[in-house]
Length: 151
Ligand SMILES: [Zn+2]
Image 1 (spheres, rainbow, N blue to C red):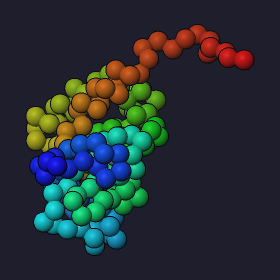
Image 2 (image 1 turned 30 degrees about the vertical axis):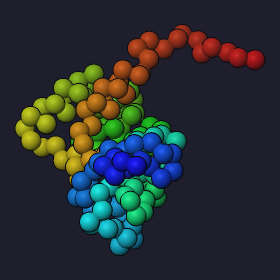
Image 3 (image 1 turned 60 degrees about the horizontal axis):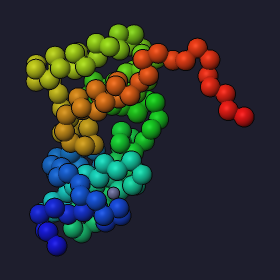
Image 4 (image 1 turned 180 degrees about the vertical axis):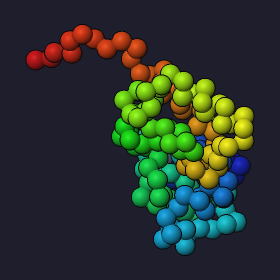
């Protein structure tokens, strides 16, 4: 067993280490009462695994966080960029931001200006830009004229 890389107790996959401040910022008050500050916490990014954070002693699930988790919740209202509140819908150009194509550029500007607070806003505890670009890339550029019908 490698003690340096703890795997998720549910799906057995390696997670990413997150800072304690991320959990302190995003756990519900009730979940926070179980925090073990000497533990190293990991983030499980598997979309089908309900565990969000885990340590050697326990784990937290989606309901233990004050915000929905981008990786685990496919709802269009879920933030992709938590700091500046851009949801999947916004990135698809269907929200209040009509200039969806420019969103990554806008976020980069905020990062350069040191306005980004991913470690306390984003459940993954790190920059959202990769997820933003991935989400935009996954949006079909041209929708088919007629939806394909299956019978
Ligand atoms: Zn997991």
